Length: 259
Ligand SMILES: [Zn+2]
Image (tube, rainbow, N blue to C red; front, top):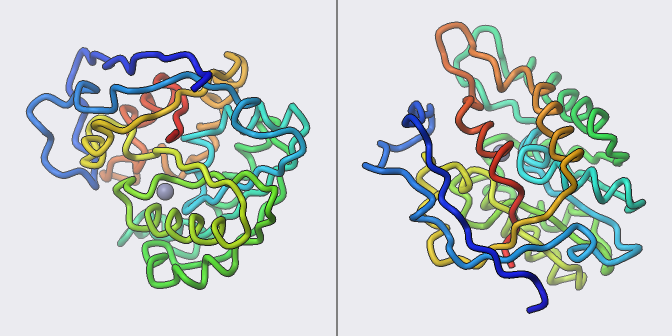
């Protein structure tokens, strides 16, 4: 392995994160100590070969930005063609909300992603598949056939064990589609990176790569996150889908891939 070995340092928090709406009861001491310890450092140039198109399979509008937005910005600036496959429109993020109805979310969330990509300076084509938010697993085989992949593409998708059924179904579908066409498939953690998420413990013993991205791209990503207004603000008395603690993880802990 030609990459520089770097330890995956636990990030000490000064206070315990607030419970998230989707979270199981908090472990007694959530810590990166439970996460992957065998990691190495890589760069966008090492990950994607010159001339390769970058395809991001995004289960929901925001996953691609939260987890690898800075990397996408770096790759776009290097001239790589980028295709975002928006698998769902994210219409299921606020079940029962009077304000954020499914129709409203289906309309606004894709626009939030477009705004975030613009802020990041990412030039991307976007294909919306419109599969049901929360029901991707029921369409897994269909999704594998719908993904418009070529053999020289470099495909990014959330981790197959990321702790969200849609993320995991997208991973299985992308892995199958990449096997069929001979494309390279790279998985990245989204929710598994968040220490208070139950899937975080699944990182234990996994070999991961931290992406060394220029600080200006990381800073741009932090600003671009504000574009996801439907997700970062409370809905009346209901806490935001993306809590401050979760956003801090994606802002401060870098971007990661599975080796
Ligand atoms: Zn998602």
